[in-house]
Image 1 (cartoon, one colour):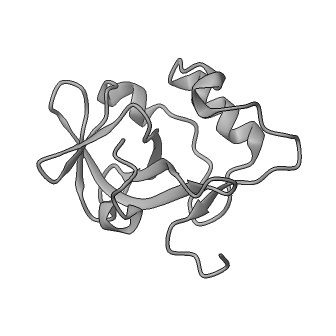
Image 2 (tube, rainbow, N blue to C red):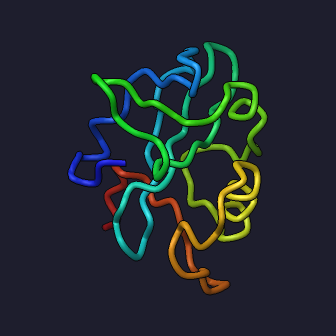
Length: 125
């Protein structure tokens, strides 16, 4: 993911899976507390459905849309942790495993008390 892009500009963008199928719209962006780098996006998958978390690292911004390199079915099957609060280290680990990503892709293993997923627009910086 291009880290020079303000993560707040991702909110409201359309998201598509690896085959070009529309997943939904980026609802929220979560930052790593330690680095401030955008790490996860919550994508609203439909009017009456939930948000699905997708990793931003293997995703890319292409022509104003978020391209996620996973199939729509896998994304919609992602663990549901709700939105608007921190992801715990355990929840983040579950997401990495769900997408088949190596935890080392996210950097060093987190200490047990570390919070992840600060919302990009949260005011407690």
